[in-house]
Image 1: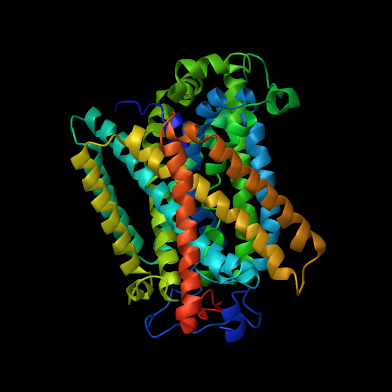
Image 2: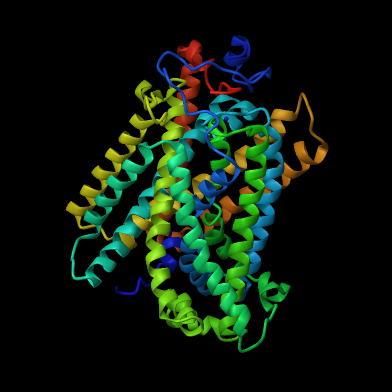
Length: 512
């Protein structure tokens, strides 16, 4: 099999109450969180199907840690703050832990497959909630299609090594068919399948880490990566552009609240566990990679062969078998990310269709598997159409498909996360409920400020995600702004012309 080479720059450049209140457009008044499914959804999502670790695996699958490590770290070293990258992962992990404080506190009252949509709608009002939903859908769809470009490219390379030459988009079509088959199955099957992929993915990371710990590095176990003079440098802002994408898919815990067992306990625990596991894995493994080369040598090695850093060390410290395993698991990691986004997006469409913001058919669930299968078919049809269009146009998966998908995704999700932090403050403003000042104000204010800074950094460093200076650096931020305004405009139109539908937006469920 031909070695899968640099994906560094590519991957990086990779929740009815009062009608009066509804008409006013303010946050939904609180009461016991319950809702019954409308006639269009005769069978809701499967109840009590997911346990703690299944939800954790869904989150980790969405993030694809192996893809992040092999793809993001070398590029962040080159274009960011150099050997300070591990500290950037650690800082990002702390920020998301702070974000989780308000997110989990509000989650005790918000149970809706629309996740961030329901949070923002119930904290800042339905118009902003709808805007957040539109942003999240476009962002996740963009990142999913970017991953189709990646898996098509690397899958075609792998097949070529076995003597089978296929265009990348044909490989993408085969992956889309397999993703559709998996996503239509019940959520328990998906959880187990993704769990196996994640265990294999994490296993090779652990083997690499243990090998470095056993052999050491030419400069010992240097902690230079965490020293302020190597972290707080001008390139830190650019590093966060790459690092932010490594925590994407964070809301997956809330998305599966309707299908979780004991969601009041499972979802908060899964949220904290997932954030800690992702942060520790990315911080520790990126630091050990730098240790294996030596802090003074890793920058030169990254400049020489950014995609080969992990393969070089894996082959040297363990043997070629580990390098081959990383090659294969890079593809399975991308498949896990795509499948996880398929599940996330189909549930977003299900939640919005249930409330009249999407075609009502998307609110129907499979009679046996209780999955939003029609929404999944629509997503797959869109992917197939885009892949065929790319094939006809001769689009390059790395220089065109990837940046046009991943750049708006990073911008859109950080913007939604900033809105969610502000929504926590708005939700608890009149009625603190069980929370303390840290949970309802300080933590969400800090995380919201951090997310807004992240949005500014992405806009400022958009060229790092798109791969150079082009009109896309301006069009992508403007396009995402337009997406948000479209959602806002739709909600305002419903408030004026369809108040009964507007009043149904962002309803909560005690159990579905």
